[in-house]
Image (cartoon, rainbow, N blue to C red):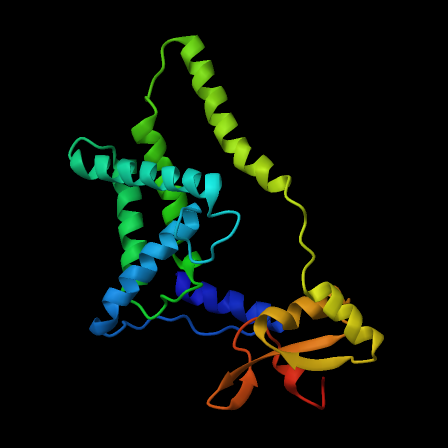
Length: 238
């Protein structure tokens, strides 16, 4: 039932002005690409956990933050391994979490999706791994009230520290802010740009500077495949 329901929902969304959509990547990649995809998959996992060796190094994947992310990743791996080792006695929930991780990673690794900035495609690994880590590292029952309170306080502290550290960072001014102001000040109201600049400048300017996203293929330019409206590229309706 999900297929016709999805088609109907999409038709209604388009009728009310939703963005155009790109077909999902459902193909299987050539076998000779699988080793490279395995490396990209491992890097995607490290990026999700914010561990050392993330795809996009930065304040969230270096120093203490990177070490904390690595500990979380190792805890998740330990939880996964523990369930696999005790598969017959593990709960059904733990088994399903392991299966979900394997299916998500396998679908990603053998598909045409792996690339440098596609970690979001394996996002399910993060919450599933967190649950497995908690089940492996924390006792199911803590009889002593003092120990239970201490464990709860420690868990809360560990969870809040990274959030507090992130909140204390100085805000970074997006590049779209000065760019939108400069374009508007010079009377430039319409143009084209890459994906990361187009919509950001348009939004920052309150649609007063309309920048449309394009992609370049073989020295030719085409409208971006996602998060765009076909009418934006029509000189009659634009």
